[in-house]
Length: 59
Image (tube, rainbow, N blue to C red; front, side):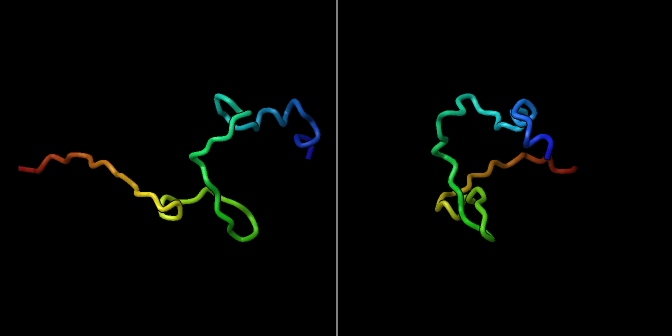
């Protein structure tokens, strides 16, 4: 409660972005239980591209 009342302390919890006044269009939100959360790639309709890590075979 003290932090919420103190603007100087509250400033520490500001998101770390290069331009806080500009909205990041790549982040979309979806409602869940009366709140919002970042949407998953599946919810965005996107495709998750995963890289593979080469593994040496034993032998």
